[in-house]
Image (cartoon, rainbow, N blue to C red; front, side, top):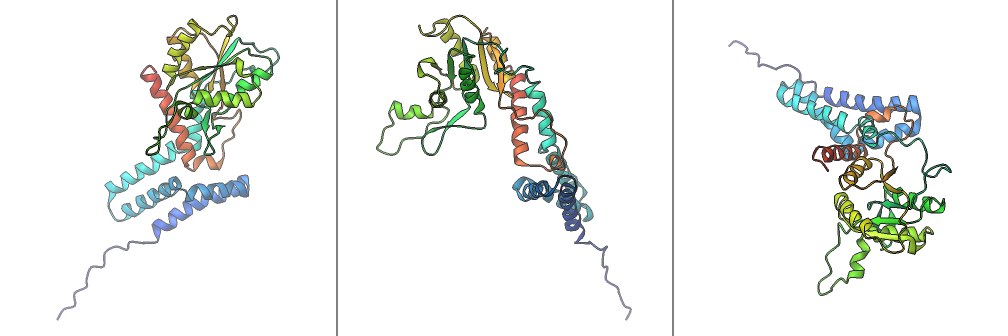
Length: 305
């Protein structure tokens, strides 16, 4: 009887994909440690074990595994996912995008001695929220409110207008009605006023204008300026305070309503000088959030908002 050798097939090298993936992630950790120190390396390790980092590494692992098993089309799909995450969730990419959205910072601080004074500033809602303890608190855009308080204490402004309406009010409990005062706790304009009062701004110099989004706020501001309260100052410039990334959209909408504001951008997502770091090339959820914010502003411009 003749001996028949069974086909063994080409070796699959099951260790290749995990080895390359681990070496790839390890190279970032080692590079950061060598170039920037222990803390940078620890930050990258944290980013790599977060969901975004794990999906990024998993897509690289899958690309290598599918390719060596001759599943080239599937490998190309996972490679596209790897590239997608490498670019769109990269802190460097998102920083470049946000710099374009925010634009150059004003050359003169609004708090400088020779900076303009205002009869009023408008603080767009979004800088405050309701904490779990039921009190108003500053959020990531909280410098909108803080800047208004700083301008007041610097003697730069005579009145402050806080805008916004409820975007979220929880449903009342069964058999219990929520009165208007309780519902109003979720109003961003009220929250801004509460915080400004706690920061030393007199309540009789604070005004409130509604609007659930920027366009509605601008429409309501037109009505406010057309018939202001008797105590509201009538002569002088009006400043507009909002986050730097949101300022271009706010100014476009204000111009559409024939409102003339001096922009006072705050809450920058980028710093004056940010050298490129190894960390900038490791995808993270924070970077993805910035990318979302930047793209949202670009889309708003495309649709005329």
